[in-house]
Amino acid sequence: MKKEYLIIIFILLGPFLDVASFLGLPFSILLRGIYLLAISCFLILKKKEIKLLFLLFGFSTIYFLIQVFSFRIGIIASLSAILKFLYLPVSILYFKDYIFPVDKKKIFSMVLLTYVGIYLLSYVFKIGANAYLETDGKSGFKGLFSSINEFSAILVGLLPIVLDYFQKMKKYWVVGGIIISVFIISLLIGTKILMAGILFSVLYLLWQKKDALFFSRRKIEKVGIIIFSIFLLVGGGFLFTKTRTYHNMMVQQEFFQVENIFSLEFINRIVYNDRLTFLKDNFDYYRKQNVSNIFFGIGMNNSDVKMVEIDIFDIWFRYGIVGMILFVGSILYLIDFKKMKKIDKISFLLFLFISLTSGHVFIYPAVCIYMALL
Image (cartoon, rainbow, N blue to C red; front, side):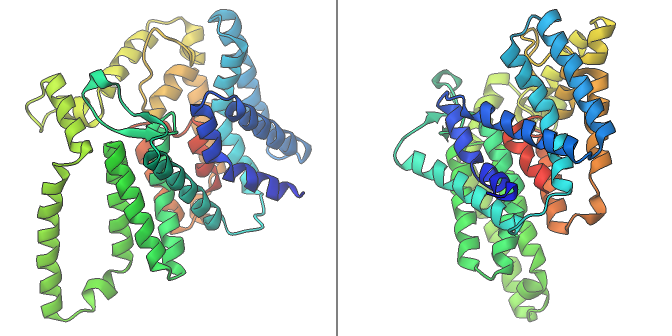
């Protein structure tokens, strides 16, 4: 079997690897590790960006040794840490010269529909777990996926591409079915980021059809559309107060006793789920470290401080100044934004937005492989 199809099969297995991770099976890290090793060997044999690979693997070797001998972290956990560091830049490097035998949008569509199908089936048959503890007061169902942040990031990031793909094929019933399905999922999970991402994708899709839907219409039709939109906006705002997302926000607001919604405290506690507090804690801890930890990080498995869950800061604190410069620099060096299609840029920006709000994108293999494919 050609390696092109092996890679495609591996990508399509992504949702099932996440289910395996939820079930506590070792297939996820094992297969993703084999994938990374295989594409690394291929790049070395083809002599693709050897200097960059040398820098990436050189840092990873030093980081691994520091994790094991300085932080006393186990070998498996340390390997997992360097897997997260290498996964996105090496995947981008590999896919730059990768020739797909099928349309990438078709692959993205199959992945998204698989995730949607697994989640909805798990909810119908009540297989899986709740997203929150009973003591939290929040409600939500995460199904057979360990991380609702990663699951949500995948759906939001891939949604514009998939909707655009079926819209251009004029399969509008599929477009409608996908929008309804992911919206139902957002209601069941109860997270802000997924609902906001779906709304953005739908609005972008409508904007693409703005002439046919509005500007080419007669005046009386435009007035009707505006009135309908106002009713839809008001009705949608009222219905939002009945959702799990709103309920969870109110639980959090009551827990933190935030009264002023136009305050930094509201942004931190309710919008960012207290991540700005985690950021301060990490910075205070990080700046007190020795020179080695400043340059090479405090370690991915450091339990003294909770991860920020804003990717750029987690990369900085956990991999240090050297790791952050190498990680961000290699991605900026490898990506040619001018060659990216408009819809791919939209998805990329959504992934970037999620990485800066709820995290779980850049150093999480389940998500970042789709960024590499863009």
